Image 1 (cartoon, rainbow, N blue to C red):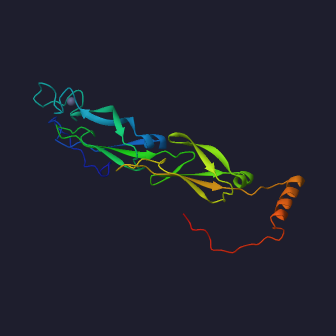
Image 2 (cartoon, rainbow, N blue to C red):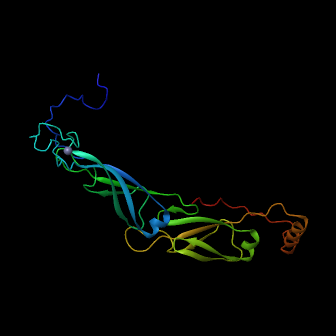
Image 3 (tube, rainbow, N blue to C red):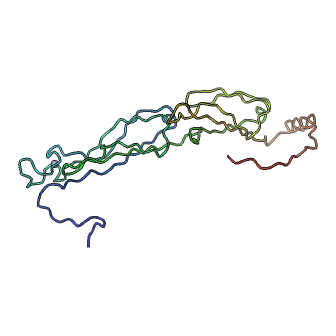
Length: 238
Ligand SMILES: [Zn+2]
């Protein structure tokens, strides 16, 4: 029985050198932060692959041995393991899962065969705040009820540094504010996505006696001692 399923049984070769074979395609993974994707970047990719053997120039036979003895460097394979570092230019706006093809940068072929290709797969690292939907970036701000009622202004750290956001007085929970052209640049064509800020306004809890009195007073002044409850369809799901 063959001890290595999927591989043909090895017959003892009499040092005739490697057969000509195309090198294998190689895949490398590149993890990128959203900020790197937003700006584009140059990243170093470390690739474990194989190169043409320098001693026998990929032929597999020993020098001057008329191919009768396997090369002492590569053992007749015609190639040796090699770890390479490639500088790769990443365009702004790449998507998670994008595969960049580097033709002929994979494993060297054996016996003088042609090199395989290298695929670099882009993985987008999770951002602590923003979630990417297409080229838009979504986040949620949790605003105290009093600030939502009175209006406020706050700084949001975007891919381009801090941006001032105006929350108008009377902002409802569930409303969203759009910072247009602050998202991820479109990979093809000009322009970029937006930042969408979802507003969440928690209802105050654990009121002390004075606060409760204030809210009762407010309800009274607004004629809401007996509140009117409206009935309507549910919100549309994003
Ligand atoms: Zn060699």
